[in-house]
Length: 182
Image 1 (spheres, rainbow, N blue to C red):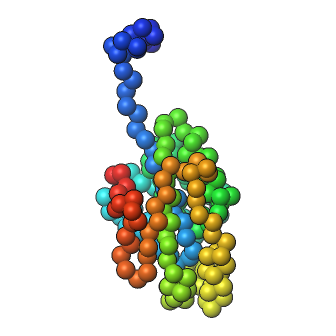
Image 2 (tube, rainbow, N blue to C red; image 1 turned 180 degrees about the vertical axis):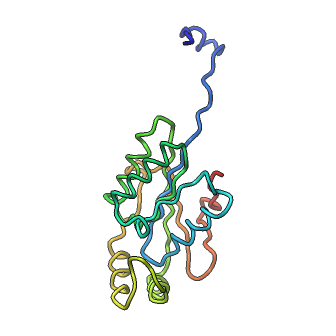
Image 3 (cartoon, one colour; image 1 turned 45 degrees about the vertical axis):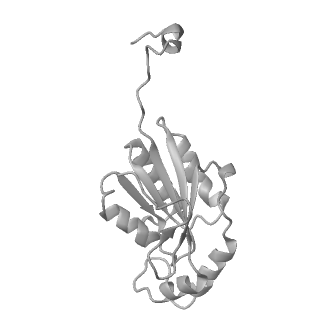
């Protein structure tokens, strides 16, 4: 154990080590907006091994996703939560998990601002999607888009980035390019 007096700290003779920051990035937008494509590119790119991608389509339930996020954070991995995250109640569990870690955390939301017609077209052209396929999926996309409420700092979010994504590479808004820690 190291005993440090308050006088030593005030005098600047003792500094605390810089702790790593765990990043929890919530992807938000209707089905077909590009969330999973983005997450897959992070998982297979330079973020491999340091980023955990948590996707409800593959894990099957929100509870399974919560366990996966908690596990990844306990392993000091950054996390991408690939769900629609369409309102505050859908985002709250991930924010709470991020804030419950012993290390500092930063919660960001990437909002995939994609035209509903583009999302519907993408969803209708999917083959073999685990949870959303067939003509009724258009109504699901439209409903999710209507239910969407923009994320705010009052939810405990540190940064919100809006991405315009209509059949063109996503570009960040005025916050600058999206750069995820590697």
